[in-house]
Image 1: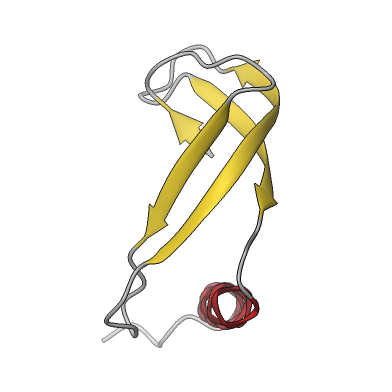
Image 2 (image 1 turned 135 degrees about the vertical axis):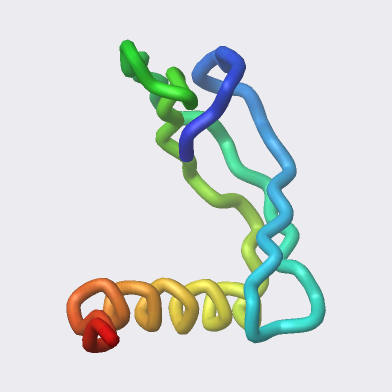
Amino acid sequence: MEALQKFEPGMCLQLNFNLQEYAAPVIVNANIVWIDYKKQSYFPFVLGLQFANLAAADLLRLRDYINQAIQQEENPPPAT
């Protein structure tokens, strides 16, 4: 995850994912495992996260969303 502010490894965040195809957001706690810094970037901090207590239904929703995003990236629609 990219961020504007610096966080520290070991911190816990609560994340809300609003996925286009679902009415209810996915809400999950995540522990920061690592942090990196990117110079010359709008979001200078990159966080490695480990989800905690992710409900099975939310895991499936996230997997579906990620798989669809990957497919769209690999097979973009033809230019008009």
